[in-house]
Amino acid sequence: MTELVEFERWSNDLGQVCRHYEGIARRRQRHVAGRIKVRRFDKLDVADVSGNVQCIRRDYNGIRRDDSEHIFFITQLEGKLNVDHNDRRTSLGKGDSLLLDSTKIGDLGFEETGGRLLSLHMPRQMFLAVCKGSVEIGKRLSLNHPMAQAIQQQMLRFSLGDDNTANVRKASSDLLLNMIQLAFAKDPGMTSVSRWESNDQRFEFAIHLIDNNLTSEELSLGWLANKMCMSPRQVQRIFQENDTSFAKVMRAKRFRLVAQRISNSKLGEKIRISEVAYSAGFRDLSNFNRGFKFHFGQAPREYIETSSSAHTEITAKP
Image (tube, rainbow, N blue to C red; front, side, top):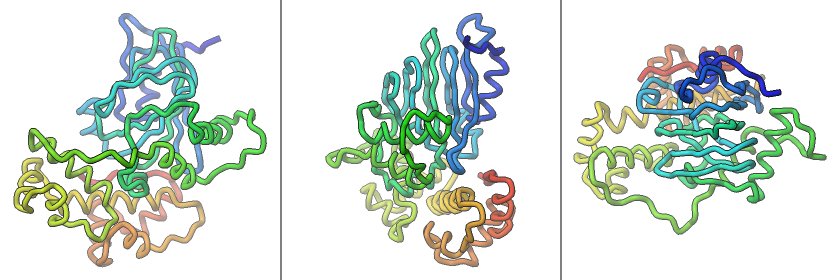
């Protein structure tokens, strides 16, 4: 028998698991036939979400309020899910999957009969640093895709405890992220957007380029301007219109990447701060240490100790 819970409780549980994603009730709906639970895959959260609400929504207010950034691997276990995200409208049937970006608005619509999905929460900067812009956000991955089946075997067996697949060895979280990257790899013939109608679109494209080249030694204002076929002064003006600068955005994203790599390290693993900082693109350790403490309120070594004991990510200053 399907579990019935009050909509308010269901919505609060959703907020605890998927911060600043809002559950939208159907007309006169007071109870939800479903539940929300948190599972684990190594140090990654897996949200187990079921219900018959109208939709789960991420709007601009939710994006602005949320200091954490994730890429979600969504896989549909039961029912049908209609997804509007990243300028795509997609329907997921049982076993289908897609990637969801927490920095973009989106609607996940349920059928009246309800549905169930799993959502693997991957730190956004860490995932994009591995992928280097080679994945498609919002694209449906069919159950028939061989990588989809391998990924779902991992999540079903080692997160939910389902034991219907023989001799399946558990992958590390790093390997699972690599499997997801391979499954959603872009068509080599795809090209980046090169024309825009507004500075908002130019700014969004600039952020896209920074995200996908964050650890590159070439990343600089001049490099970015060249990629956008603009002058450095023009690009800097676009950032100023958004109350920031290229340097602030790049440094904040690199600090977030360092924090995510620390938070997702294995218990007992010896972490060399200098190696993590260099791998994220920092070259001056003194400036890195000062900047890290400003962003997170703790020195890197203190952050490691806090992360090891609490397994939580500290919220950075905007």
